[in-house]
Image (cartoon, helix red, strand yellow):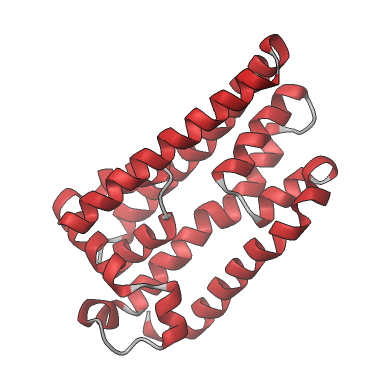
Amino acid sequence: MERFRTPLLWIAGLRTLLGLIAIPLAPFLYRDHFPLLVLLRPTKEVLLAGGFFVRQGDVNPVVVVLAAIPLSIFGVWLFYGLGRGFSEEITSGEGLPRFVERLLPTKRIDQLCRMLHKKGRPVILVGRLASFPSTLLGAAAGASDMPTKRFFPTDLLGGLLAIAEVMVAGYVLGEAYKEAGPWLAVFGAVMLVALLVGVGRALKKQGAGE
């Protein structure tokens, strides 16, 4: 994988840039070009809104899911490749250029590598379903030499479940908005995000303690 490191880094930089570009554009894309917003920034918050818009009949659920896949699925696989390509530097903690260290923080990835060695694929599924940086899990899976035949199917399942999880929640909250008003919908969204963040933090602490 070493010979592919440079093109993978360029693609990873482009992925990051797209996410940053989407932030100032979000107010303009939110209503009239929502699938494009999902394509640029398929975060759980955006997908939650996607489920709400599906309930309102404003967007097609298939289009939203397809728009989310390039960055939310293949973007993580990109970091799996980077983890493999820089596995020696990540393991030793030395030799990574500063700009690569920003993409692949060696201490955090090394913690996740140890957790993956101990608990395996369930960590990838839980990380996908929680509010957790899946790119780092992907990089850790690559750096720890998890075989592609184990990582790709597990991460694909987790990624698709994560997309469905949040969109279904948004759909349910859309029903709450219709029946009980905006306050209940907002409360439900806050509680869901808090739950996902809580699980993600528990996973981080567990990784730090390994």
